Image (cartoon, rainbow, N blue to C red; front, top):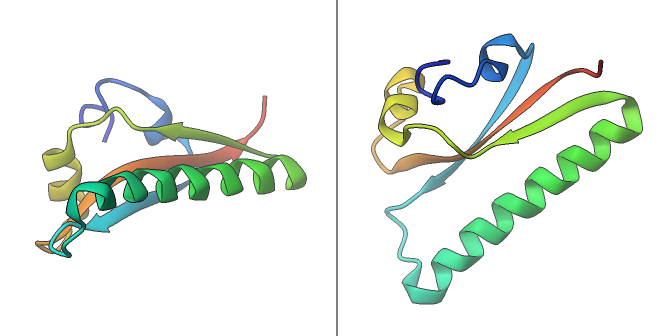
Length: 91
């Protein structure tokens, strides 16, 4: 997974990961694409807030090779990864 995330080591080291996906087959329209990214941001923000509350470290990663991550996760056709949230201990 490290190569798929452009040599970022955190995805390989974190004990838990959340993959934020979207089924692109649904018609979103011109403005709809904006909402997809807003929703992913809101989800990540809530994970950050809850992580802080319970003492879990949270890092959001948006830089990765979409196709490679899709292949590694064996995602079905319409789904594509939008973001990756890594969870673990805080230093």
